[in-house]
Length: 219
Image 1 (cartoon, rainbow, N blue to C red):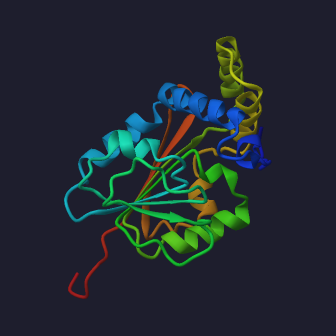
Image 2 (cartoon, rainbow, N blue to C red):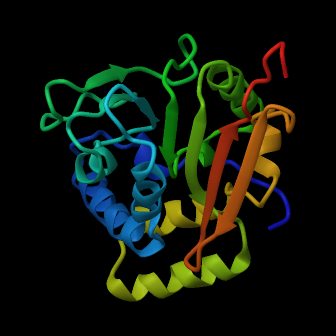
């Protein structure tokens, strides 16, 4: 698994109300819990969330992460091709669109969970150009591309995962990232961004990028 391989996932091609899609999303919530993605994002956000801070979640899906881990007073904006979830707080904003079609993402914090691995190198470069101008911190959880996590995924088959989830898990890991790849693909310059990456026990690449403090003319 040396090279990334981006292949369409079955879930992305199913209608939102399809029983197979609904089941797979439930299974994905379980997988997120096992990987600890939402817990990590929540910890990383805890010390920076305050009134007035704007947070953008790309690939927000059904809004599960935001509903479970963000207070209602957060200035939240979700971006996804899916329709706005019915149970989001009324004060939160939702943009139903492709993240690559539109202007820059204004907001101090940018969050994505198991989303960026859907994009090829050219698309990631495009995304990087859209977010790098205004965002101060990026927090991403993505699949870590390694054979051991394929074996871990096969163990989950014992819990009766659907064929959709079993297929998409394999595809996601093959399209995942190793340390250093995501920053390079997004074209984040070292002079501008301080990047910290870690790997979880159950296959997550945790990526945090902070914009370096801009020097003033007197410094």
